[in-house]
Image 1 (spheres, rainbow over the protein chains, first blue to last red):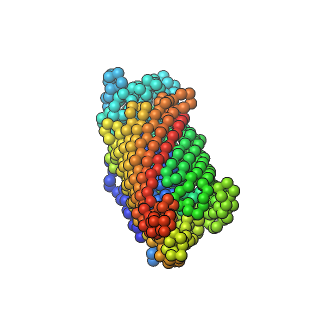
Image 2 (image 1 turned 45 degrees about the vertical axis):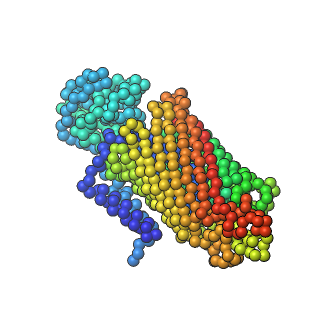
Image 3 (image 1 turned 90 degrees about the vertical axis):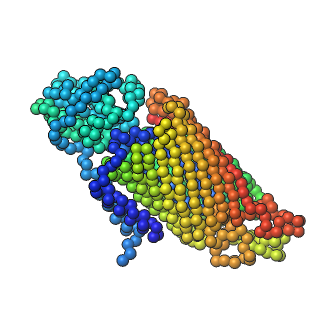
Length: 75
Length: 169
Length: 396
């Protein structure tokens, strides 16, 4: 649980510092590549879910997969 | 007293939401003279803001890879056709780095308002573009009166209100 | 279903982690989509087919619903089937619904998944919140899921079943994700996931074995004894880079450890190459390695040698590597009537499993007197599995 607490604190610090003087360095009109469908983390959710299940039911590890973020940043 | 991980998580979430819940309102009254610009359109012809002095101008920044931009285009087109006789004009400033996708898109979904290309993003920078899409409404004297960030269905009503207001001035 | 018993708790969590992946960043809901999916897994004496139909629809620009139905059919006899002579035949049905709501820079998802098979029922609600900030360069995600399972054992045969319900298991998953756009071409994410389990956590179809000079084979089988709690932490770092000629490469590393002393390391590399607007080709390599659980042993010195005992190969020291290739073809690149796009995908992977302290006693269980292996000298188990996935996706 100590590692989790460190993670929470780290992300909290990162987020609060973001309110400070640093400006977003990738402008909204520079998001073209990140908006490309090939830059999505998991393009086919059914396939990802299936293959994750294949591994999780045969290995001793579980969890930690799945990310959000990226994309066009519109709206 | 040791804070439980769950409590720490909750506090972090609040900090995250508060700092991130962008205090950038979707729409705001902006001010100052609109930066002048001259860009070329798809056929190579020059066009710029100065051509439309004396008219109410809406500059809409868009890109081929931006979903909400595509959504609002037909509505912008309708608005342009309706209010053009009353002294309104709409300039679409495209921010794609390359022209071919813009050409393809406009061939499939044409619009009647002028579309100028800003591949170096000089105009985007001059207008401090911080959201895609963005629409800037400029009055007859060339001053920025209104900045709208993003697009959600229903926003076109806001545009119409502002445009009518400025036309009457 | 024997194959996946010990990790059945995780099926819904894996589902939900993937559903989390469906909430594609930023504040724009993805296109509506419907998929027809078929998969076949062959390996280790098992044949498992999976079929799924799923659909996603936006009801307003801010709200979408996702539904998927999955059926797994298992048949075969794995290396773990020692005392039952008959072939396993089982079916698992899973229904999942996810609601996604976007407001400004925040995305909320709420989902529910239900999985049923003859000897196992699982229900998982899950909630998550995703917040875009700092000019949409940073996304923070918080998630919480809870699974309640009912665990049983089929005392009869595959064709004349008799299910005895053994107990319940409950699992809670806490997720924290941080995604950061580093450059115009580069995005990285970090995810922390703590999972705690409680209740009946063993696979009822597995047995331990212990040295027994009185037995013909030199060993006898016995019941596993599992702890009734388990807490794990997983940290995954993923990074994806856009290559200038239009391709994407990604690397990921996951570190896992739990209170059963299993430590797992996962490395994965992915390369995506689109060809014009028609094809997307993808190559994938994955390597996984784990240490054994503290109470795991292939052969105990005598019955009840430890407080907890397991011989489930999922908890053995092992490694595996996967090579996969995937090709997606847009048969409707520009759409047709109400469809914006239609694609067909074929994905083939091969996984090679190698166990470092789990021995193959099914194929090598002759008695020592017959001149074969002494208990504990049987060859270490290894097997290969091939997985085919074929699916059609319509976007509208």
